[in-house]
Image (cartoon, rainbow, N blue to C red; front, side, top):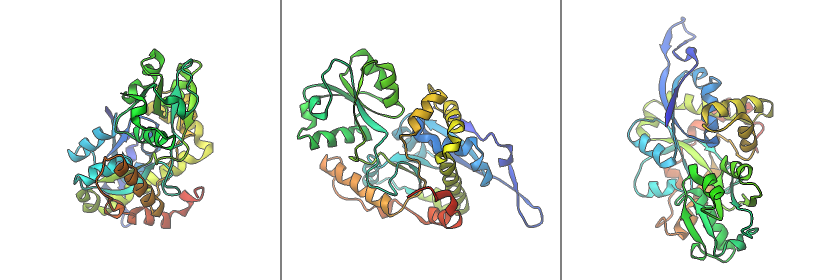
Length: 336
């Protein structure tokens, strides 16, 4: 884990229009995952969008969603992301959070968005379809979106997790476990899907995406953080939305790739460019997001990870992003 302080000196102070009065930029600590999922945050920091909107930002990077949530609850982070396929479990257990802006995935437009997750098989295993997984050793990070994805694929193929040998493999070991032969196939998400196909010669992409789960995440804070300083929260949402717009613009692809190579360890610009094309960066949250949230909860209940439905309105607060969209429709003109 590591953190990055704002590189833009202008974040220290900003001028108020009336009388040239200056005010201290609002400090904010923003969490992000140490992979291409965090690109919206990395771009907001590197291109000065946080500073532009009056924020003195510190980006705090953690390896897992659970580590981000732990840091959030400890007050080490003001805003952090969490995937819709495990966040509802924490909410049901009583954690209080308010989601204010999108972080990853096309949840605003569709209840499923999983183009950045897939299953890769070693050569010589005979695995070419989901049905071929039966009896095989499959690596997957237990309790993650990838795990939910695998179990949904098995279900639709008439199987359960009992029909395979399921091995718990953490994300940093996805590629090495497949390369060493420790598993015959692995469920991974970008950049590890592309990394595995590059590293393990002759490996087979059994499936990518397909609309089975929502590999999606929102950015949230604890209620006191969100509402104590609404201007700061609004500035944060504005910066995230502008960064997402910059990130999606094809003409910025080379610059985005360079940014990713600086923020994500073990990735060069070429790898960033080849992996981010499979990821949707949309800052919007709204009706579609609620549908995606409900769909994830339904899957979690079916897998006995949750006991009952959870109302997404208890988590989502669209008022900030609604304000952003109203004031800056140009940042969303390219989205459906």
